[in-house]
Every structure is written in C-alpha cells, then in structure tokens.
Image (cartoon, rainbow, N blue to C red; front, side, top):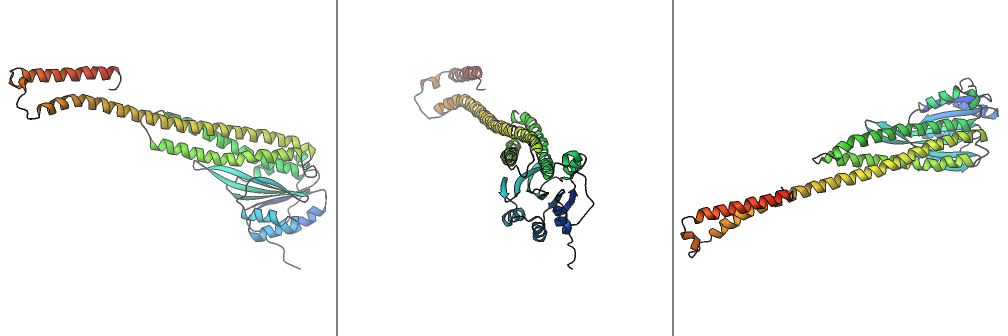
Amino acid sequence: MPAPYSPPHAVVNCAAYDASGRRLPEFGLDRIDEILAQGDAFVWVGVREPDEDLLAKLQLEFGLHDLAIEDAHKAHQRPKIETYGDSLFIVLHTAQGQDGHVVLGETHIFLGRNYLLTVRHGASASYAPARARCEREPDLLALGPSYALYAVLDHIVDNYLPIVGDFEADLRTLEADIFAASFKRETIERLYRLKRELTGLRLAVSPLQDILNQLIRFHPGLIRDEVRIYFRDVYDHARRANEATDTLREMLTAAMTVNLSLVTVQQGEVVRRLAGWAALVAIPTLVASWYGMNFQHMPELAGETSYGIVAGTTLAACVGLYAVLKRARWL
C-alpha cells in the first residue's frame, strides 16, 4: 500500500462541504476522489505557488486537462476563460498595494461540477476571508462550487477598488506640484509611474468584464441560475473599477500634458525676460562701440558738453525702452 501523499506548504486550504453547505471533517488530498464520488458534496482547494508534483497530484484527483495544468504551472497568462470538457479554466490578474506601488499577480481557477481549485501566483491576497464568508452563509454555500467561485471573484474585484482610491489620492496630492511655480523633475516621474501602474491595473480589470459576462450567460451545467445574479453584482463592481481606471488614465495624461505645457510657458517667460534685459544692455553697448572706433573726424568730440549729451541720451533711451518692455510684461 503506497504511503499517503504529504502535501507541501503550497496547500493553503483543503475543505469539503455537504449538500447543506456545512463543512465536512478535515481530510487529505488522497481522499479527494472519495469526496467527489459522494455526489452531493463538493471540494474547495486553494494552493499558492505549487510545484509540478503538487499540480500532478491535483490533476490526478480532479481529472484536469494537461493544457490547463501547463498554464497553471507556468503562470504569466493573459486573463481568459476556457472550457475543458465539463470544467472551466479561468485566469485572472490580481493586484496588491506594496510600499506605495501596485504589484500584480495571477490566480488560476478550475471549476467543476463538484469542485473548485484556486492556484495563486505572485501578489495576491489570501482567499481565507472569502471562504470564511461562505461558511458563515451555509444556505448560499449549498448552491455549490459556483457560489464559491463568486466569492473568490468578488474578493478579487473588491481588492481593485481601494487601489483605485489610492491612485485618486496620489493624483490629488500631485496637483499642487503640477501647478507649482518651479519645475520639479520628480513630479513628472511620479506622474509617469502612476500612469504605468494604472495601465497595468486596467489590463487586469478590463478582461474580467468579459469573463463575468460569460459566467452570467453561459455554462448552465457549471453555473447555477441562482448564482448568476451574484455574478452580475461582481460585474457591476468590475465595470465601475474599469471606468474609474479609464478616467484616471485620462486625468494622468492631461496632468502630464499640463505639467509639460507649464514648464514650456515658464521657459518662455525666462527667455522673454532675458531678451528684454539683453535689449536694454544693447543700447549702451552700441553707443560705446560706436565711440570706440578711433575715428578722427567726429564733430561732437570737440564739444564741451558732448559727453554729457551722449550719456544722457543713452540713459533716456534705456529708460524709455525699459518702460515699453515693462508695459509689455517682458520685464
């Protein structure tokens, strides 16, 4: 008799629920097939960063498709929903805020008639709160693995919304720097970083709407009709998050454009002021260079008041030009 399979630490949770939504006693991965054979119970397994051996064991117990297992092991997949026989394979991107940055991860979900398997990669919050919420509502958990799937998707989407709120707060903070009198390189760098991270978040949120739309409309053998209304609620939240990210991306683009425009205007002001002062300096420079050319026949050189007249005329010209430039706001 082979030794019982010893699951690695990657197995976060392994539970089974009867037809009334009550949790069954603890069991090991080796007994999954026994639970599935009962017919009126379903299994909910959650793993994180599994190795090949663990995925092979889960594939054997649940009868999963080779291509889906390959995707779940390699990760770095685009969000999608695929049908493999009588099961669904769903790929979602998750997001978490870490040290002021948004870090993306992946969750791969296998849904069958009597099982739900979640495989997490990278940055992803634990689904323990979603599981605990379901266990507090056994009447709803009695709807089967499709309701457990709703709880997981709802948990993922709910994690998007605080991140969107953080983006809005960061943008409001940056508005003061955008319209500051002096240019700050850090401002445009922060704007670019926010837009890059917001684009990554949008790539995670936007495809989720198509996935939820399919879960609302199709797969009658796997998604119970009573659960579809819950998926519509998640769809509304995902749509709101997607619209918010689109709006923020437009605002960030506008903020970057305004910031660069203000920098250009400020540089133009500096150049204009320099040009005004250069014009003022040009008048005495021209007069001095004129009288510095060693000409002998300059009638005004012989006059006793010529020096005062030339100096006064030069000063008057400078004052007049200064007044004109000041009125034109060049100085």
